[in-house]
Structure formats: structure tokens, C-alpha cells
Image (tube, rainbow, N blue to C red):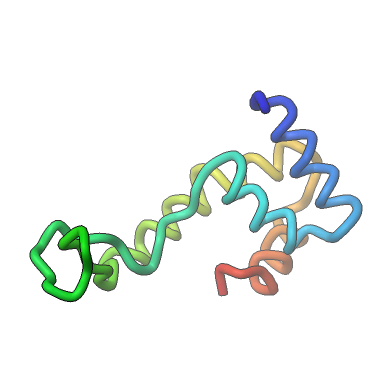
Length: 95
């Protein structure tokens, strides 16, 4: 699946299932959102690979940067208004 197919799929989901759902698919298919928990390379005797998930201390900051540099510009250039995107974002999986 190349990038134009991914863009068409996200925009199709926005039309069919609504913009909040499309924001999640945008994160999945086009530009991954930052994760609230990240893997650490520290030793943990309870996991086979020696990795454990720890809270991402910069999550809110990274999410804000991702939202302003990737998410909003993508949907703005495809004809959605800032108000529509903000409403959808507040209903999406990111809140």
C-alpha cells in the first residue's frame, strides 16, 4: 500500500465513519502518534527480552508537536476547518 492509497483510505474513513475515527487511522497509516508508554532497554527480570514499558515523560509535549506539525496540516489541506478538526480530536482516541 503506497502513500496515495493510505491517504485515500484515511479520507474515505473520514467521509464514511466520521472525522474522529479518521484521526486514529491517520495515526495508524500515515504518521504515527507518540506513545504514552515506551520500551526501555533497562534490565527487567520479568520480561524475556529484558525490556519493560515505562511512562513517556515527554508524551504531552510530543503529542502537541505531532498534532500541530502533522495531523492538523494534513486535514486542513484536505478541506476540513480547524473547528471540525478540534471537535474530532476532542472525541478521538487521543483524549
